[in-house]
Length: 496
Image (cartoon, rainbow, N blue to C red; front, top):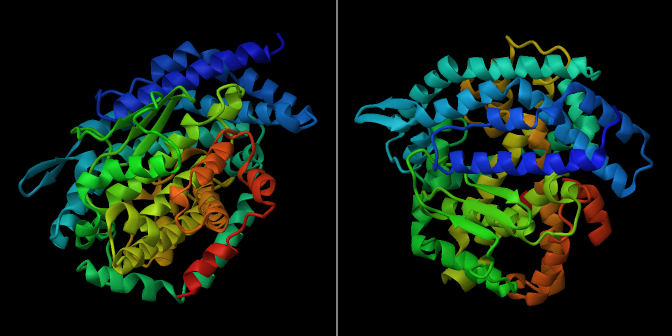
């Protein structure tokens, strides 16, 4: 029976909203269980093998344009859902274990998902390391077998659909040359390698942490927390500064009835801030787990960038352009707003910081660390997701590649859990590069205090209104006539 595209799209929209709502309720700590299996069961026909193959055939014969984009975005969803159906029980069990496991500590126990928060606020490096070792033991024993099953099953099903490897499938579905991207990021590593210690080590010393080479991964939450900067980032200014920034751009946060801000602490709330676009643009949740200090500001503004992108998307766009597409686009807007929390003009205007030197130096070090980590991760994930990976060697390769790029003593335990589906690592890398173009354009067009310009807000809303109809490269070409690359970003770190 031929695939009815209109019916498929309607069912797909309901599925995406239901699954996003379920993840919101679970990850925000409103409910301990992640119950996605019933959702997949209700929409099983979306992810049958015949549906995936029919969409692939239709997408392969389209002449392009918006209809071609819509078909490719649906195919990405169907492919991911086909694999998700096969591994939904493992996904549920992983989420439930993460929400329920407790890590032994000298003073009792710490919730598995709260270890990062404890480390961020713990001055004793040995306790940070002990917490990480205990958490990693649970990860290896209880969670990694589930992750490994899901990985093996994804590889098997991908081959059954006709692709030689998961990496090949993702590259084709997303229209990205992942190998070329890995070469670009390897060049970024090469260019920034000489300056990395000079940027990071003084900030590590200021935080009372070991230098690169001796730094442990368990020290990183404390580094990101940046307690020495607390006076510059008062907790009581967290949400007001975000609302005031939006007001400067002509947006009224309190008046956005489609935006729901969730900053309340809950025991099982994930420490990873997130935005849940349940119904774009009508129902968008912005969730942050408060830790305190600079990291909280960065997290809120990052997820706030996602939120405003989704909340300002044109409601008349087809479902695919509102909910699917190239996530490097929404990530670029998240990074753009996040960057304001390290912008001298913004710090002066919103937080009254007269001497932002330490804050800027810290933010620069943190960003370079993350860029180098993700540059290493894409190379690692290409190996892991290749046609015939040597799984026995992968834990060592993970620790070697990420540890070498970051110069952090990196444990092997996360070799399979520190991997997002669909090569999301590529979205982050391309989004960081795209953000440099948006930021430069905003400054050139509207001045250093562009965040106080209603005209800048109108320009952004024009970009946001397009949802993710275009990919990152296409949107940049259309909006600014520029080509996406990493050279400008590397130059930002090479110059003083």
